[in-house]
Amino acid sequence: MQQFQITLKNEKRRLYDRFALLLFLLNAIAVCIFLAKSNYQLLSQRAIPGLAGLAVTLFLMAMLIFNKESRQITYSFPIASFCIVLFWLYMQYWWIGLTMSCLLILYMISKRILRVIIGKEHIIYPAFPRKTIIWSKINNIILKDGLLTIDLKNNRIIQQYIEDFIPRVNEKEFNEFCTQQLKTSTSPI
View 1 (spheres, rainbow, N blue to C red):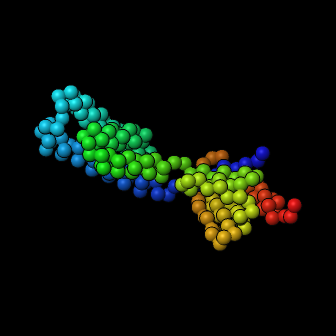
View 2: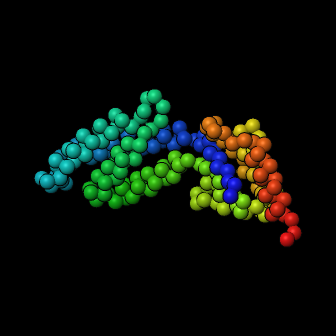
View 3: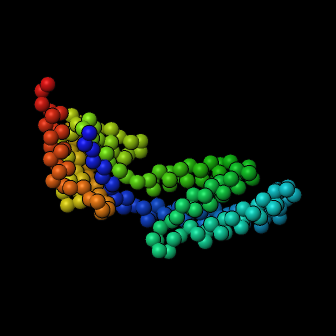
């Protein structure tokens, strides 16, 4: 069964990284202020070593969050953010913990690889949740100069640039495959 996989560019990735880093830093500052103002009155004697370990862990992870070579946030960011969420939940600030959990989940969803899978039966588009488009609902689909265009019969057009990864999809072969699928889906059986 012939199938194509095309990776789309996630042009907002740097914006997501910066926003997530800002939220992380604001929460880290809030944790420090909270601990300084509480004078450890809210903490039991057994929790102080755990929170000290948490603070050291957060500091070390903050140093590793930003990879200077690729200029992107590394995998340690979600771990550090999860530690902050656990802190807020432990301190019984549920609304902050749950809000941060939701934002962390949205961040992970926005950072996923956007891969379009084009097969003989349908096209799987990486929306959230994933969208399955059958061939009979498509007017045209074309890949030209690194731009994927899907023209739907309901007058919607999806256009996105693809990543410049090697190996790259052969545009001529891809367009011929799509034309053949469109012909078979519209021909009477």
